[in-house]
Amino acid sequence: MPNGRQHETINLVSFVALGSGYAFARSQGLLETRPLLTSMSLLSSFSVSYVLGTFLVTPDLDLAENRVRAKGHWGILGWLWVPYGKLFSHRGRSHTWFVGPFTRLAYLAILGVFGLTCAALIASALGRGLRLQTQVSRYWFEIGLGIIFGYYISQWFHLLADGVFPWHGHSLRRRRSGSKRRARKRKSRKRAR
Image (cartoon, rainbow, N blue to C red):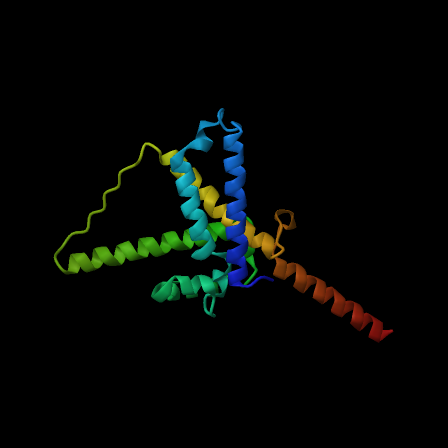
């Protein structure tokens, strides 16, 4: 299995390959009939979320109680991922193609809500109010699509490097432990004969 640095290198090389393929397709006029694919909002949000998914929010955060590069990239906030590491066993559900990346997004959302709630309570205790305002961009669809695809594709390259393919349907750890269990049963049967 690749270590954290190797995963980052694989993802960055893949990103360059994707970018080169995109640039070639665009130079050949293959994307002219697909205006969504030429949207700067989509391309920018894809790039940012891909890089964040490569360095900050990786499948290996299920090892957050240990020394993991992704946790280290969070700096002093790396401890926030320790509960996630305790919730998910390494190469378990967190190393699946759709559920794994979603669990990290959901965990981030929970952290965000918790942080905002704490900030509101502190502001209230200090006699202040906390008001958040958001403005939806007219490019919200392109930005959202770019974020989702950039994040998920960065996760999928990580999983491919770990040998987890979409058709496996379950984690690498379970497959290996199941095959080890079967091998032990065969050995014990041979000894019993």
